[in-house]
Amino acid sequence: MALDVEALYLRYAPMVRRRCLHLLRDEALAQDATQEVFVNCLRFQDRLTGDYPSSMLFRMATNTSLNLLRSRRRRPETHDEDVLLSIASQDDHGAAYEARSLLGRIFGKETESTRVMAVMYHLDGMTLEEVAKETGMSISGVRKRLMGLRARVQGMKEVA
Image (tube, rainbow, N blue to C red; front, top):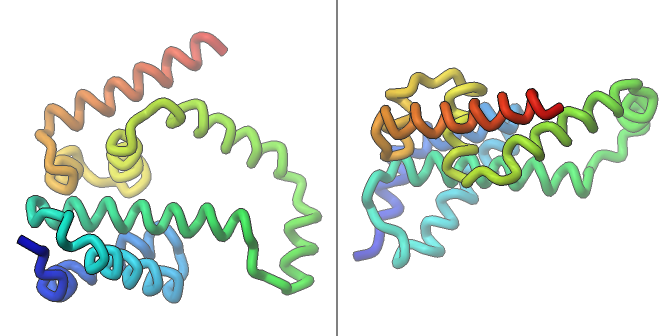
């Protein structure tokens, strides 16, 4: 049975927009990402199930927003000379590179669901119970995943 995308939109669009806005920090981009999430729901409605719709849409919003950020980083759209000059004159390039490199090492071998849980818990400040509800997992399952991630990060610190 196909998803009722209109019903999903009416119920969950505000949640999806808040998630996109939190990650993108730009109202227009968040609105575009929200629309893209629901366009994808329409596109794949025959393949998607109605089980845990808030978790599915939260994950789709997260992935859509992160993909948008990645693509904008690869293809910047600004032509404002003041912005370009301020970026070019920053001295934090080494720190930014180190941070990206560290995050790549931490999350490189993790599953997408573990990365999403880590973002929800550590960045968004959600509780274990909220993360569990959004991902459709048990609280102990979320705790176990985050503890495993923490242990792997600690192991990386000891090696370094």
